[in-house]
Every structure is written in C-alpha cells, then in structure tokens.
Amino acid sequence: MTVTSDVIGATIMAAAAATPELAISLVSTFWIEGEVGAEAIVGSATFNCLIIPGVCAFLTKSHNEKPIDIWPLTRDALMFCISLACLIFCVHGEYVHWYKPFIMVIVYFAYVIGLLLEKYLRRKTMMLYYWINEEEEKNSPHISLSRLPGKSSIEKETLLTQLCSLLFWPVTIILYITIPRKYPSLAIFMSLTWIAVVSYIATWMIIYIGYNLNIPDSLMALTVLGFGLGIPELLSSICAAKTGKYTMALCNAFGANTFNILLCLGLPWSIKLLISNNQSIWVNTEGLAYNCALILVIVTVIYASLALNEFVLDKKIGCFFLVLYSIFVVLSTLIEMNVFYPVNLPLCNIKDYYYD
Picture (cartoon, one colour):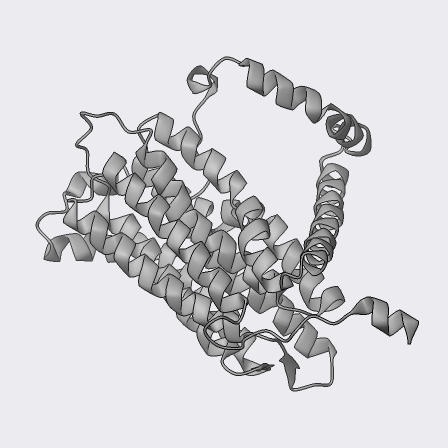
C-alpha cells in the first residue's frame, strides 16, 4: 500500500509531536486523578486553532492573495469538531463510563483509515466541485512536521537566540549526557523518560501554584499548561509560514488536535478502566464540557471568517483570531471561577488538615 507523506504526518509525526500531551494525560489520569490532562489538551487545542493562524497571518506579505487549500483545511476542521463532540459525549455528567473512551479510540483509528482512503475520497470530491483543480492533489500539504524548511530558510542567530541558548545551557548539558546519540533505541527511551519526568513536574507545579493563588487547577491547566503545550506546534507552523506554506501551517494547527483529544485522552482512560474493577471513573468535567462547546463555536467562526475572506490569510484575520483567543481565555476564566455557574468545588485548606 502506497502511503502519502501527509498521512504519515497525520499519524506518525502527530504521535511524536503529541508525546508531552500524552505524558501529561497519563500523569493526570493515574497519579493526580483529576481533569488537569483534559483541560490542558483542550487549552492546547484552542491555542493551536487561534494563536497559530493569528501569528502566521502576520507573516504573510501584504500582496499575498494565494488562498488556503480548502480540502485539507475542511477535512481537519471537521475532524476536530467530531473530536470535540466525542469528548463532550464522553465527559457528559461526572462519570466517564467504560465504553466512552473506547469509542474515542475507535473514532481515531477510523480517522486514520479515512486518511488512507483520502486520495480516493478527494478525487471523487473534486469531480463534484468544479472549483477544486486536479493539480491540488499533487501538491497536498502535510499536516504536521513531516516537511519543514531546510537550513537555507533559517535566519541567522540573533542576540535573543544566543541569550536563550545561554539560559538553556545547563538543560542542554544534562540532556547531552543522559541521551546517547550512538544508540537510537536507548536515546528514544531516555527522551520519553525525560518527557514523562518534565510532564510530572510541570503538572505538579501548575497545581501547587494554582492552590497558592487560589486558582482552580483546571483553569491553570487550560491556560498556562495549554499555552506551553502549544509552543512546539507554533514554532513549526511559523517555519512553514515563512516559506509561504500557509496551508501547511493551518493543517498543522488543526491536525494535531485530533490525535490529542481522541487518543491522548481516550487511551489513558481506557487503560485505567481495563486495569481497574470499576465501570466508570469520576472526573469533574462540567467546566470542561462548557469549554468544549465554546471551542466548537470558535471553530465554526474561524472557518466562516476564512470563507468570507475567500480563504486568504491576512493581517486583519490574524487580529481577529488573536482577539477571539483573548475572549476565549476571559470566558473560560469566568466559567472555571464559578462566575456563571458552580463548576468547581472550593479549594481545601491543607493547613487546617495538618493542624487538625
């Protein structure tokens, strides 16, 4: 079977890029037993959908009128909406029943099968819509990190990059010592180990800082942790946008969300239900369901705004997306802080627990 590079990007490369999300979801499910992992993945998905297109829009040239390829954008946006609908169905109520996570995993593998049949489906679709040319199939963009610009497109190091290199020098030395380059299998194992350790530390710090600031850990995960998880996708999309591959940048933003939601959440929940005797697991997900519904509306607005702009990515669209992300953060903060409706229990006083 001949597999195109965009299918590889949507499966293998998406899985590699989503390793931190999967690690945080595993830590949240098995050790913390909270909704931190789910909220972080939802926050990262919102970051990918709004911040990445917004930033890439400012990298477009003023005379750029090249529209975004409609097929992959529609495909990834529609699949993202289906993923959100599956997540809303899974977290409806306070218990995640045993069959719901398995449905999410099955939907993801059905999505992979759909990618394998994409050539056939796209050819049939282009026969129905005259405005999609036959040439677009040959130039189908990648979804993830499978084709990044080479060394010629990378700018020379600036003072800021040199300063960042100096600040991260201790981390670089530790990784250089603990990850052997000569043994690929051991290098992969050590890399996954470091990702798990850093994910655990990041999750613990988010909860600790949120408690001291009297902020729910779900809100900290949705905003701070979600923002941090979206940085790698942002950097890769910027690299693609600098070379004029705006469709690739947007597909990278939407495509990774499907893996994050369906597999990074569905797989840990399924494993936990398999190894336990319970038929369901309890997760405080009222705020998560509201945020997912809000993201569904946002994705619809994103696609409609691009359609009204003839699928051309420009600076006014970028400003609109950045404003939309600010609105999402404000509304999510109000929801998680129980302003509209009580979705989170009040924080416990640990000092009183120890004194008693």
